[in-house]
Length: 183
Image 1 (spheres, rainbow, N blue to C red):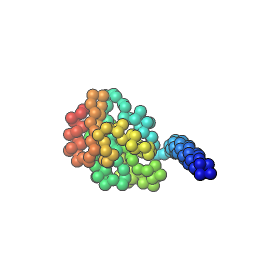
Image 2 (image 1 turned 90 degrees about the horizontal axis):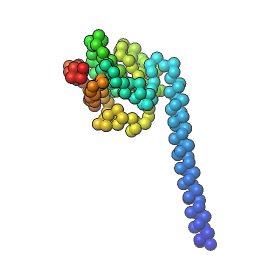
Image 3 (image 1 turned 180 degrees about the vertical axis):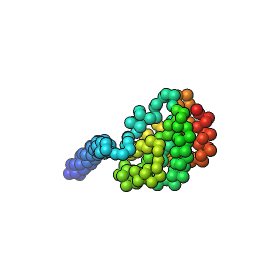
Image 4 (image 1 turned 90 degrees about the vertical axis):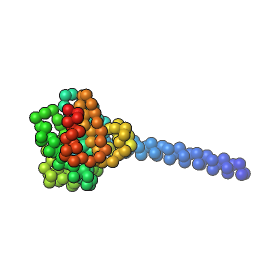
């Protein structure tokens, strides 16, 4: 009798494990489908909303004669907010040269209309702003730069010749000096 009960419990535990595994896979599929649907929900957004593969394809892999300054920031990050005017000033000063500033917001997508857009309007940001809506930061952060530990502000300055990554905030002079060293 003990053997039958033990065998029954083993079978029950084994089948529960399979159910849990199937549940985890199903949940992962639903999450991926939900994220895809959420990005489609932002088609009428005043700013572009990208997942990381789209950001990587449309921005981080560009190789032409333009120098890109890509800053990762958020409306809740005080050092980010402090340095944003420096990026705007740099974009204005170098507008006649092939320099483009792109500000990649890491705010939550649900805060797009309540925080990000009002922030852009309040501070009159002229640079291109993109909202990165990709929860899988452990996957995409090392693709931006293997040295990036995930802190913001973080900035990439690159062109077809060179690429530099910075996990820090800048003064205007520091930012301009880094740009000059690359262009």
